[in-house]
Length: 305
Ligand code: SF4
Image (cartoon, rainbow, N blue to C red; front, side, top):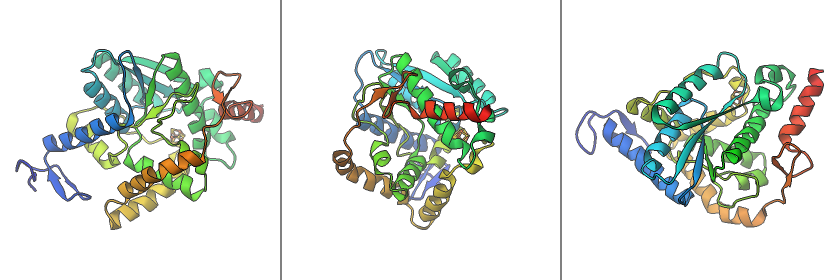
């Protein structure tokens, strides 16, 4: 297979647009869309700090690499890494080492926060107590709370995550089928700034998971390839399977899901008004007296005895 642009050896075939690309043109293809997405999602100003949530997996490492190389040219923007240690034995520590090393090499400031320090429980301790819920329910709430907390403490104007096209299509479908319109309306990227909540940006929003993996490989970006021992229980897996099957039959399905969502977004925003947020005792914004993370932390502490 030859690249459709330069006739060099192709490394991939992009099914949804029918092109063969060599490594150089594939990288340019990804970078162009990420730059466009950053421009579309955010208007950065001099002095802005962008926190990047990095687990060490391919998507977050590619996000950190791309933001650092795209925005690194602007000396007035500070890119900082935020890593959360959920406390999952044999899984998170090796990935954190990769992140730390990468940040050291590139001169990126590294910030860390652990569930055990913040919530006095690790995911390995929480998982057996999660009952009928998936451990991911606890992990997701604690992680979002921790990321927002660290981002606010470092003075970040934005928090970038490594959510790719597949993740985004899955999140839209999950909230749509559950009828959770409020959460559907609150999915990032965020245009409105809510007090205490750091707006999220998603530079890989239009990049499929397979392209993120290939980009990491061809660009030589180190990443951790481990699988979380609790990932089998994630509800998201069911949606991943359904969307993958639809995409195989009709290439472009994921793009269509996102495009439909984006067209509906103005209507969703006018239907779901921004909620009045209070401040939880932990300092995080909340709809009720206590934030969800504190509610779960207290329930787990009770079950732990
Ligand atoms: Fe947390 Fe679930 Fe992801 Fe594991 S798979 S890191 S438990 S959200």
